[in-house]
Image 1 (cartoon, helix red, strand yellow):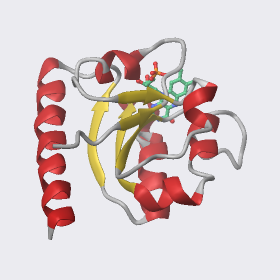
Image 2: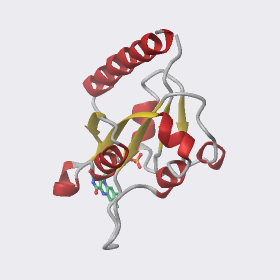
Image 3: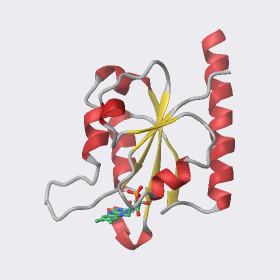
Length: 141
Ligand SMILES: Cc1cc2nc3c(=O)[nH]c(=O)nc-3n(C[C@H](O)[C@H](O)[C@H](O)COP(=O)(O)O)c2cc1C
């Protein structure tokens, strides 16, 4: 069965990367140019942190994520969004993931803080496995 890949952005602090490395499935870091310029070959999931800047029309979405979503093919094949954030940011908590979900009409699949707990990792593993099955079924119909 195809494992739905996760395309993620992780800064030098690497919290998102630490989470994604524990999921045990294909994952590509959009901080790397090679992946940022690619087009996906099927359904995929976005995992993004939120980065609030001082800029008034800032919308917290990392530039690498924005670039990747500039591709119509990538936008069309996006099936859901996961977010890493920090509750200290109050009303901006998970702002980037929620904004991408709202703009694309795709669901927020999962949210966690920082690098996530072991329970978060387990929950995301189960959720992604279920998604793989749903996508396999919908394609064979
Ligand atoms: C400058 C800065 C701004 C941030 N802004 C937000 C924010 O608006 N909302 C939020 O939920 N988390 C915010 N965070 C928390 C990060 O999204 C969170 O720590 C994430 O796990 C970082 O992932 P990374 O280390 O892989 O880049 C911010 C963190 C930093 C350092």
